[in-house]
Length: 107
Length: 277
Image (tube, rainbow over the protein chains, first blue to last red):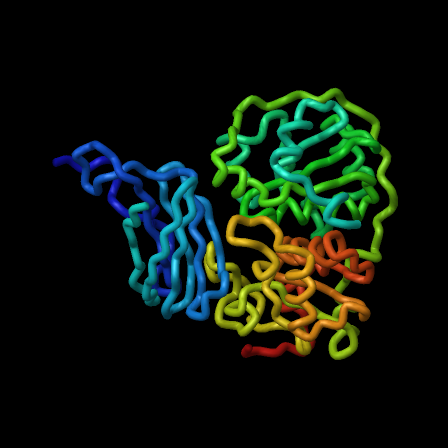
């Protein structure tokens, strides 16, 4: 087993004031054949949308060239919807200020 | 002004992208996207460097707009097709911008970059060259642009539609959640504004809902479309999206985009502000 690429999860948090920001971030992966941790290939053409606790759209970002995304939300319950060609995945998250939520989502 | 004259499909773009009388322009919030790949023969406008004055907060002047379009090979009779990321937010802003300067034939790619990507349609990295022209713009059309004094006077008298997310409307967030929650202005919304998020008008793939659904969204929220309407958001891009829906798709004439939006209104001294849902 080997670790592929950088630290699993979202982009580097360097320079972000985590004391004041409520960060939800992560990486989108699809099935890969490599013996990697995490196992999978970064999905660079996904769109991740953030819905509030009522299901209302709050924001959306495309994944970057490493398959990563990031939101600056508020504390509370949120839903992520990941869309990519041929795939759609929903995942609920609880966000807290001061402690980033960092996810690995497989599609 | 109708869906037929303002909106094109991906198939239409594929059939017309080699037509020299058609200019396809990508406008993104994330300005690195174009270089990563774009629709064949599309050029790009940078929403800040090309479309903002830079010294004062305003659109570029008529003369600079003429120079921008001339340099990019766009004539007065060119069919301009705009598209972009983030559900066409900045592309609809550019659409509104072209209308402010009176361009005759400007259209939007339904679903923008996102739907194109979800359909696994091709992108290229080749940057096309277009032969320079001599473009002549019209004077700014202020019947589609609202300024702050008009917005203040509209409180309680005209329709004011806040198209931001409920969390921004209520004052919980200061900016869309893909941006850091910073900024000098206070949080909240313009009193008597109705919160009808731009996203209500779009399907999950970024395409627009049907005209019947769109009318119901606004009328169901109690907006009397016979009255004058002002749409705003944070910096005027998302409200351009809702302006497009009302003015172009539904053909409602008396709609203005307040591009000063919350970053201006929320910084004004002494104006009324409301918070909560």
